[in-house]
Length: 210
Image (cartoon, rainbow, N blue to C red; front, side):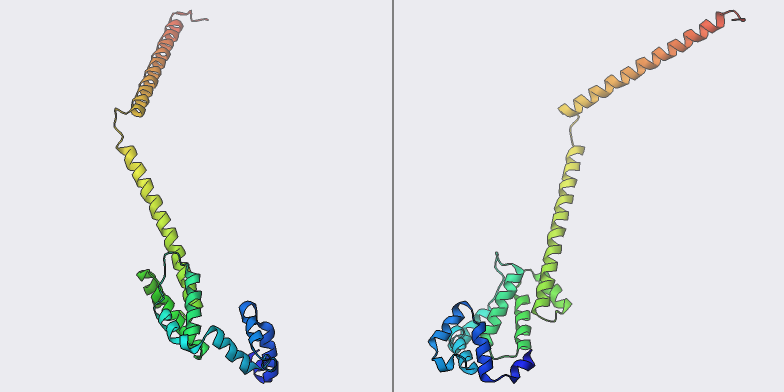
């Protein structure tokens, strides 16, 4: 696509760019004379002057270098913000260089030092790769934290059950039920033993023929 666009004339490239403009960028066309609205170089200059004036480049570079993850920032949102500032701070730099600068600034902007170290050790190729690694690590840390909390709650519950006092109402009821059951079983065994003895005595005194 890039090779085809490079072969286009200034007029064709300007026409294509003008048709592609949306929202606030369309208002730039109204500020240009009619003869310049479809000239690619004039249209690009007007867009740069409107949205990225050279006088603000230094300001964008300061904002770019001071980018830090805030409490409510999502990792993809932070990555997109860093990418935008990189494009504004270094508009004339090659795309590959801007992506590398954005990747490094994104890693440095993370508040989790362990996450920063692990992403650097993974050596991401670009900003998108660094964002993906950060999201994966965040999901892993969240799942691990939930697992540890669940295990802690289970240990606490088990400890509470072990330290339950013998005089507590639940323990007293359990002991009372066990005593009743044991007494019932013992009575049943005595009755069965008595019946067996009676049967043996009856068989002993019966006539042999019967």
